[in-house]
Image 1 (cartoon, rainbow, N blue to C red):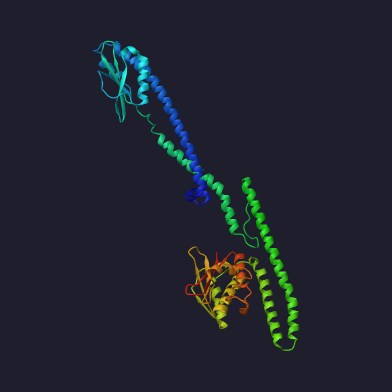
Image 2 (cartoon, helix red, strand yellow; image 1 turned 45 degrees about the horizontal axis):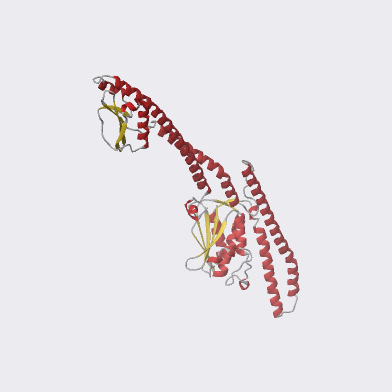
Length: 435
């Protein structure tokens, strides 16, 4: 598909299918209608010329044999829809212009014979009108004025055409709907995939191609869940097994005499313990969906969390409120919000918590700070495990690069979403959205 065609094509598959199928059917229908109309026109033209040829021959023979006084009375009887007889020389004009006029003149000349001195001329072209002149045997001139007309259409034909177009649109819509419905289901299922394999399974029925795609998708979902589970199990096992030797090393270091090297060794062991705990927490965060969802008052829940921080003297404020209830996993949500508030306190000294509902009814909780912030090109990467910013999340601050990754993983496992954005005026906004 070239660039020009791609620019004019609709973006969605459904729209393209609508356009292609409807245009194809309309073209085929138009060609069939055109061929049928042309065949009907040709048949009607053949019949008309046949009829005209014999009818004119008979009419001219009658007028030729009638006395001159009786001929005017017969003109009305011999007149037809597209030609009439004129007693007299008729009208002058140019030589026959159209091919049709020459064909009709030839047919009349062949039918009446050379004794009538047949000739023709074109009188007008808008609409076409021509006269065929003859001379009867008694010397009286006779003109046949022909006015070709387009074959009239039946009054009911436009209504039939409109009905056909409606049927064509309905059939196109039905075909596209049946063809794209499995794709829509596949897209929804893909968007609902979770690390714990709790996303919806696609029904493995329907047409062969759809059933095969559903089987492949379900198998892919199982493999993803298995790979994630194995990876997290390995991480959890390594982190757990490291705790024992680290604990022994810490006990041995504490038994050493006080010295600068002893302090450094204990500090390193403390960082290793923290990293191991974070690794175990990250491994477990993928299974946040195992917690039973509960109906809570989100306003009271967030207020309680903020008050807990304020009771310990932390600079955490709350703004906004929401009405109604929400079905969430409280422990997982508390851990996510606590992680975000702790980060704000660590890098900015204060945390501002706000909550609201979007127009679509989504529960939105924001944790904002006035810290150093995160560059726009790093906002997505800081949600990856073990990724730290050099200027703010480094070893000196105790960051392991897992805090935001744990929060993002927990939100994904419980069906929510965590996004980061730069705060106008400096700082960071962490936004938690729950359906």
